[in-house]
Length: 270
Image (cartoon, rainbow, N blue to C red; front, side, top):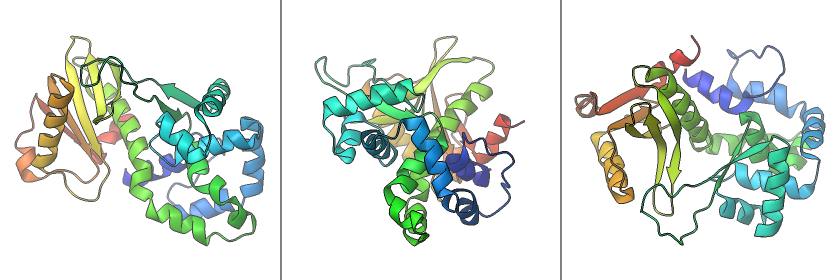
């Protein structure tokens, strides 16, 4: 499942026929993306309209946390130009805007919290994070820099896809009390990967950890502290972890704490 998540984070949303997902990742990237850079670039230019402003904004979104202010800053565009670009790119079906909601009282009535911008296809996020900014070397057949950049940011880049897949996993797993609303929650001081409401009105809050170490009880404590700060009364805490959990954390598993690992994601493909 780890391999499936890694490849979905890169190739999700493409329509290239059968992809040999058993092949090693980097040779697959070179074969299907880097070697065909010019053809893919032409298709993406047609999709985006080719305006340099749009490509700058898309790279700004892909290389950061998706918040509007930081995305525009990375793209080196002002808010007006960035907002106009986002409107056009949304209409083209490339990105979507997730609005921050003042559900709780952890931020003031007049405090502005940025919306977040997400790509509709994982592949486009990968392209504008790693391929488009380094196009000169790729165009000239030099793949060293892009490969190094991909390797340096592997876990961080896959974290967002892991969170999005975790949302889908919970929709499948919570059959006894179905989820009717699920998203992330953020304000200026905290960020929660999972905030969900069930049909019965229960609140589920959780975190997703795409790291190479087991998650300890201290992470649950951090999650609970974040909820207290945001004045969220959670009925159930959820932690989804790439590498599993410590024995101490496992003993706390029950109705108020649900733990999921990569093996749980098999439910999405069966």
